[in-house]
Every structure is written in structure tokens, then in C-alpha cells.
Length: 145
Image (cartoon, rainbow, N blue to C red; front, side):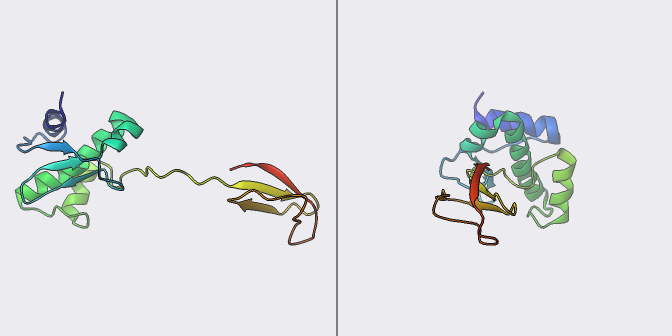
């Protein structure tokens, strides 16, 4: 099943309305799950989100874009800030925001052996050279957070 057929299926099942335009993959999208183009009615979707989070999350992204689509062609408020959009999105259980693809930053955790003060650092710390800033006690490596 191609993407346009999938979007048509979601539109019929979740909205009881027909999707008449096309849906395409757009690999240049970075932070958004999809886009709706009012000028010609087509939808773009981010394939990286489908690969990373699977079909369940992707279906919610499709619902989000279909909310824009159907409300626009009905002449109702189709923008994120409009009450019509928020209400329909809640009704069909769509995602308000796309999940982040950014890697979670890792931190090295150190603890003072004397006073228990914890330190979180992006870079490794030489525990033979550096000491606690509070009591000058010896630092010990705990783990990566």
C-alpha cells in the first residue's frame, strides 16, 4: 500500500471523510512529522519518524495533518491555535507535537566521597586531578546518565 492509499484509509476510518489529494514522503523534514499545503491540498510526511517510532505513532501524525486538511476545506479554523483544530485533534486522538528525533544527551555522573555532592558533566573528569568544589573531597565516578 502506498502512502496516499494509507492516508485515504486513515481518513475514512478515523474521520469518515474522503481524502482527495496526494500524500508524499519528504526526507528533508527535520523537526516536523508532516505538512499540509492549503494551496494544492497535498500532504508531506517525514519518513524518519515512521522508521523511528513505527506505525502507531505515524498514524497519529497522519491524523494531525488530516485535521488541518479537513478543517481547511470545511472553512473552519485549521491552524494550531484554533479551537476547531484542537477539538478535532482531541476527538481523533492525533499527536499535538511530533516526537523528537534528537539524540538524548549523555552525562557523566560523579559523587564526592566526603560530602555526597553530585556532579553531572558532558565530558569526562580526571578524578585524580579534580576535587569537590564544596569540601575538596575526592570525586568518584558513578555512571553515565
